[in-house]
Amino acid sequence: MTERVGWPWSGRCSMPDNMKKPSWIIAKERNLRASAQETVWLFGLHAVRDALLNPAREKLRLIVTKNAADRLGDALNAGPEPEMADPRKFPAPLDPGSVHQGAALEVRALDWGRLDDLAYIADGATPRLLLLDRVTDPHNVGAILRSAEVFGAKAVIAPRRHAAPETGALAKTASGALERQPYLRVTNLGDTMERLRNMGYLLAGLDGDGDQTLADLGQSCAGRPLALVLGAEGPGLRARTRELCDQLVRIEAMGSFGSLNVSNAAAVALYATKAT
Image (cartoon, rainbow, N blue to C red):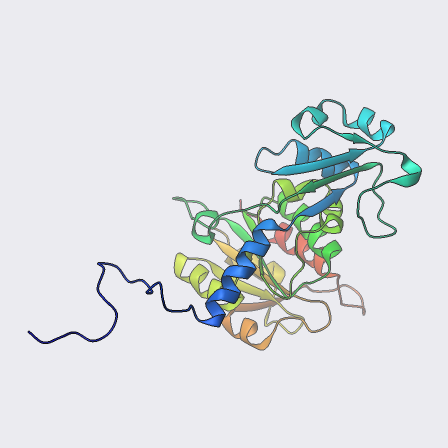
C-alpha cells in the first residue's frame, strides 16, 4: 500500500493541533472576540427608555439621576439595578457635551441576524430597503433610521467599515428607532447589492445626475421590491456602487440650490417610493 504523505485524515477538514494557524485567521478571531466584548453607552431619555424595553438588548449598567428615574418610571424594571447619580457629577463615560438628560445605559450592540432573513420577500410583498454607501455621520444615520421606521423600510444596510457604528449619538438622534429598525452592517456593500438583485430587488441609486426623476421611479417601481442606495454627502456614490445600480435617479429641485442632506434625501425617497 502506498504511504500517504500529509495531514492524517480524520473525517473532517481540520488543522492538526501541532500546526499554527495563519496570522490572518488569528487576527480575525481576535477581532471577533473583541467585537463581542465591546459595549455602547446609550444616553438620553428616549434612547434609554426604548433600549430598556427592548428584550433583544443585553443591558449591563444603568446610571440615572433622580429626575430621570422619575421620568423613566416603570421602564426601569426592565433593566439592571439603576445607579443613582448626582447630575453635577454624572459618572457615565460619555463624550463631553453629550446631552444625557440624566440617563445613560451601557449595552451590547444589537444582532439583527442574516441579510437573507431581513430582506426576505414574502409572496406579493414589495419591501423597501435603504443602503448607505459610506455614510459616516452618526447623526445622519440616526435620522435615517427614524425615517426608515416611519415609512416602513425593512432594514437599513451599511458596510461594516467606513460607516457610522452603533453609538450613543446615533441612538439619541434615532430617538428610539435604533431599537426597532434593523441596522445591518455587512462586509461588502457591492456583494450585498448583487445578492439583493438576485433575490428580486430593483437597485436604485440616488444621484444628482440620474437619468430619471424620483417621481418616475415611484411609478415604475410600484409592485416591485426596491433597494434605495444613498452615498455620503460630498463624494456621493462610489464608482462600483454606481455601476451596480439598476437605475440612477435624481430628486428634482424647485429652486437653484439642488442639494439635500442625505438623511432628508432618504426620507423624501422613501416617501416617494413607498409601497402601496
